[in-house]
Image (tube, rainbow, N blue to C red):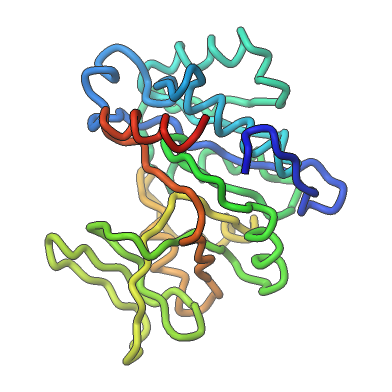
Length: 254
């Protein structure tokens, strides 16, 4: 998929909505993140933020909210200076306290009052996943959430049963495991940091504290709700979390 490729919008003629998670400290990208947010790390002359705004545009997503904390003012200035690269970008301000993925999404829930499925995505990943196909699969399954996954090796995995339903989570480095529904055949899948979510999730979130992870949300809801995997192991994908991965990304994405 080229950076300029345009696909049919999976949102049936409506402008798609998304949130980019950009508030994190990016500690793995030091020393760059000692003075800048990870969202502004560059790959072949374009920031991760710009690349993912343009990636979402390929699928008709022009309404985007970005959460900010670490060097928030740099992200806000970059968006203003570039007129959002053609998208309508809102800011979810977390400068008072970083809220993790779940808390960050909950604070931005006001942005998704249009009651259609939306995309949640980490700003520090790059992929050529066909997002239109993922959204279509999500809509056809009537899932509460669909999670992009691959078969790559990692330290933490979501666990899915043979019907592709989320059942648990495991950290293979620490041995920590949370299995919410018992099944003899659970398949570990590496999560890619891309979600398609039904806004009904906001009324179902049980977490009361302001700071929490979407992993906890999904594990608390998966026994009563359909949370599915969308495997994109054939796609290009890289987590741009370390300085050396910036060069790897430059080789993958022009």
